[in-house]
Image 1 (cartoon, rainbow, N blue to C red):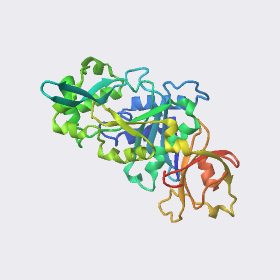
Image 2: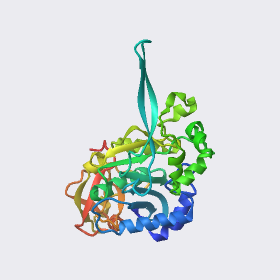
Image 3: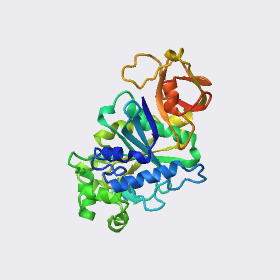
Image 4: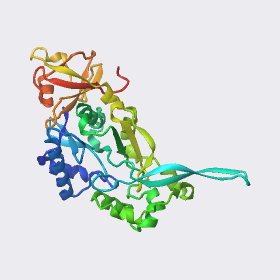
Amino acid sequence: MMVIRPICQNDLTSLCRLAEKTGIGFTSLVNDETRLQKKIDGAVHSFTKDTVSTPNNEDYLMVLEDSTTGDIVGTCGILATVGLDEPFYSYHLGTITHASRELGVHNAVPTLILNNDFTGFSEICTLFLEEDYRHSKNGQLLSKSRFMFMAQFPERFTEKVFAEMRGVSDDNGVSPFWESLGRHFFSIDFKEADELTAQGNKQFIAELMPNNPVYVNLLPKAAREVLGKVHTNTAPARRLLEQEGFRYENYVDIFDGGPSLEARVQDIRAVRDSRICLANIQTANTTNTAHCSNRSNSTNEGNHYLVSNTKVADFRCILIQRPTPIGSAMSLTQEEADCLCVSHKEPLRIVELSPYSR
């Protein structure tokens, strides 16, 4: 069974292995053991906070574990805020109008404006799933489990949340947007700039990036074509977020031109439609009526549900399939209850996996 849980200190080796596979442009999970250990330390501290009055620098990093093998095969995370300790930069794609009454000319010109508009907002990030596990709705479980945590603990996050999506680059890490714009001001490769940002060294952005508007029409065609577009590997993640209500509001990454998607937390479908029910753990002679859908040989029909407990430090989320709608209680096998760390009659949070299930 596939289980989402908070990362722990014993996961460093697995996290390093995943980081090796992410590739250039994945700044929230870089292949550096020291930084990954620091990230784990921050996440463990964040999950052990019993109460949070105001979102601050908490980092809720979770992993996807195959309970059968014990392997860690994916990660996902939520940053409670960004830009409070160090600047968070993005470009906003806007418009400047140039007009001449005498010549009868009126041109609306697209521009890129450097800004810190996401300062203080929560960010969903660090979504990565091993290629061998990109099936059986594991990607949806990994991505949407974060919304179950946010629905249960809204006080830990800001009213608005965003996701910075990885932009277009080739297999060698060459970004058309960077080559057409950033390189002219930084004189370094995209990979090096990306690594500096991942390390938290962002002062060079303020020192070298132009504060004046960048006229998009003056950029080469290769850069214009990837503006607001995502990397091929990121396209499924974008579709999932858009299904949940996230929208592109013309903010892009300053390095690779990838889009930022945003939403109000309470407008996210999985948050809005999730509800509380009680765990009804089945006895040995009735467990054949329940079926866990995240096994690849599932043949039962019915809706898929995200199911999580209501705990912070021991947060768990799994994917379950049931043939009938769920009411005030949800029947669980003992295996499912163990994976969720819940006892009989304990509260659960549930929601349909797909927005089209109800």
